[in-house]
Length: 568
Image 1 (cartoon, rainbow, N blue to C red):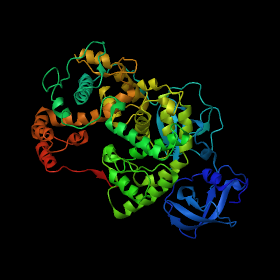
Image 2: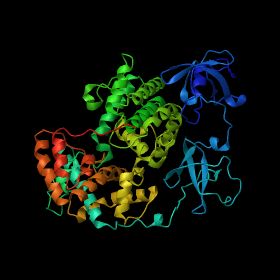
Image 3: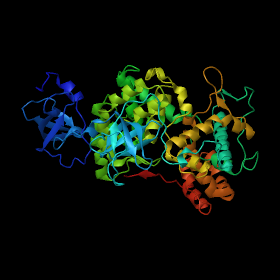
């Protein structure tokens, strides 16, 4: 393409700048569109073209000056008209201060994402919020003029901080992080952790575990309901399917890591290279986008022969591929669009998802992933690494945090040298990205006080830091995993966040069923599950049970169960 600078077409493609997401309803053959090439000078980098036919996730284009290359562009980079550049639009990835009128203070953060007119700010205290920002930065030194509650937020450019500032939204959010006020819940949490860890001991008897005091552990025996200080909880835990205490121990994380490494080896990518890291991260995020396994496999069947197909040894991932290259992601978007036309289920029911917005976010991620990789390379703390994942469109705290854990524990097997040579992985003992389930649990434990994200994380760190003392007080010899140096692996905030995702649902079942309901469920399901006559229900299924209807729900499960799926 004969554009200024004389660079080859490949470089122009790599410099494409995504436009603000929209419904793209105006995209039709014959329509005039504008494309911006970020590194070109003149005309603000905008070039006019005419649309041809749509092919997959891209459009054929004819340039106004008659050039023919590049001849195919993603819809995400096509604008109806060249928008007027505003200072706000140039704030992405830069440090800014946002004025919070309720606190009458400026708070420092970095712009890590942009979507639907909002800028996502990762504040220096670990909280992340999205704001509609004013077009122009505030130029004064003091407080900006008062604005209406629904008006765009005042902001200004700022220097990167030498150290994080602490932000206080409300007086309640600064409550000291002492022991939990609800001791019943505190006891249930540590009993839950002990039961899960002991279950793993029984499943993997050859795995080395150690006690906190270095002495030999007693033989692994699951707690019994009504004995040793336990209530009816063991009746539920012995039946429900849920994750491990340690985030890196999850079998799904291990399997996903094997899947991603196999895909990258098939693609011929060098381990630890930028392309290797970028495609691995995109696949880990794709998993957290929550597409049904059958959707991934159906798309894989449409891809060329000789492309990657996971081996059958990877269980439910066998025969599947996840899109990670430009060509694959464009292809997947085109395939996924047809699912909405057919009205078929698209997402698993394990947690909520972005729905059809993903068709816009997926192409945008292709133009964001280089920034993600660069931010990961520079990361020194777990918080830095988490911020890197939040750059991706459609990725919030829960998806970003879990995708990063899968990448670190599963793909990289806990080896930071593969992607971030200066990252101190021990910083996850006091920081994690917190999902709504764990946040709700710690809010209940600490007296029902409304907490911000950073305050919830502090309490998760408290639960991890004080775990050994709490286990000892309960008379429980917790089986810790063994570290490389032979010592126990202490629990971290990341581990507690992971475990409390399951505990939040367990707590719903525990308190709704009570002892009588838990006994009914156990009596109906324990035998069939042990004999392999029915699958083990997930803890999410248990969370919906009530004492009065437990028997009927169990009978329905024994007859075939119900698959949950979002169709958004």
